[in-house]
Image 1 (cartoon, rainbow, N blue to C red):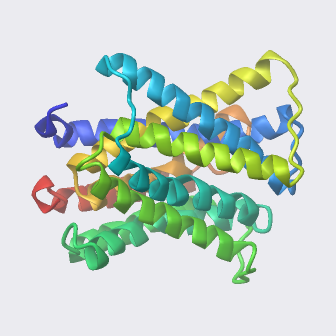
Image 2: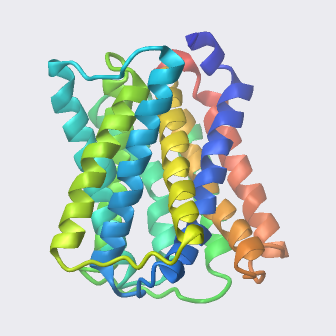
Image 3: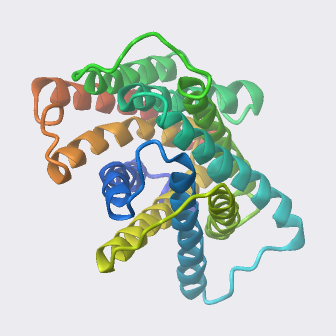
Length: 311
């Protein structure tokens, strides 16, 4: 894959929005999955087990299709294993362990807003700690405008207050920090390791750990036929395609130029929830459209100054 192709603005926007659309579809699909697999809203261990199985299948699919496309088995070298394990800890295990438990003890509104903060955290870590790019005023203004759009679309139905529980909002925040660190690690490790191999193996390891831990703590899944199997397969494909493509984008572009599209995840989530779950209140309203405009302006401002040369 030629770097100059993956650095073109139209390619970055198209691929990143595809990733966000897929991730956005996961919001309603996970809710549907909980119903099909009979997982209660507060049953964190079953949710962790469910996520683990999903990510393990995603890793297997990534490695199978990657091996077919590259016409070789994607087997990591001995020196690649520590990087894969470290990425797996942050991108899969810690991120989703804290997220699922935290989500059970806070509102979806507050979770969406806290998760959106990963864009700021990733850019700050990439700029101030790992020195992978420059921190500019325009990037911060773009992030603030995009974040305002996320807050706007998530505060229409209430669910906001200033309380912070250690196993609720703080866990969601820890999940967000883990994801931000994972974005920076992907940028660093993909310079030497194939992003497809990196994504596939970290999913396999992380998913296996989560599934075993969830099962060991008493998690259960009730398979109800073909619908549940197809939904689980779709969720696995979402992770496989989106995270692999995201990793390729991070390999060839500054962290800020890619991660800022994360503001689109809750926007797509609200829109698709309206279509699939009939939750129409926020999506097709002046508030929803204004939010989308703010997010797009924020993405444009960050991309305008996030040239590939900064990587």
